[in-house]
Amino acid sequence: MKKKTAIYAGIIVLSLVLCACKGQEKAAGEPSSEALLGGWEMTEHEAQELPEDAQKAFDTAKEKLTDGEYTPVSLLATQLVAGTNYCILCQVDPKDATGQKWTLVYIYADLQGNAEIMNTYDLYIAQHSMPKE
Image 1 (spheres, rainbow, N blue to C red):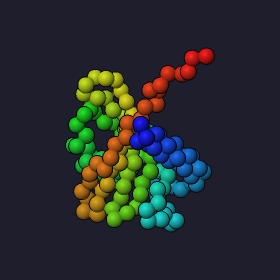
Image 2: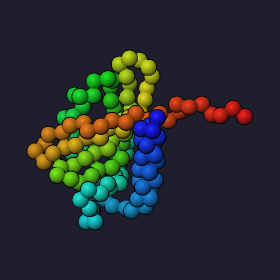
Image 3: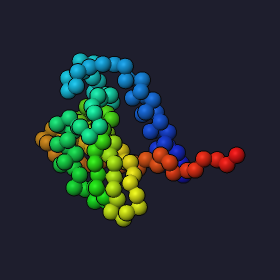
């Protein structure tokens, strides 16, 4: 239970940080001159359209996503490390037909063009019903 609470808290904090960064404009695909090593950077892209590097990393790493059909919806953030980390929001149609879900997929792409799934977090947006009055 503590793990779920920590994940939800992390998602909320990430959402607040991303909303706070929203006003900082830059051209799509243009590297920020203020990018910090290890710092997450807000991206500006339409749904279903990932930048070429993020799409390539997703396509390379998605073979390990075997529990359903993953469709990238939006690149939420990138992190410059010894390579690049990507946080991608995906819509998932599970193989077990339990209904559509949303998942955050974290991918690491190294400098040689290899990519791997680092972690996934399912988002339970409407998991709990409203309290009864």
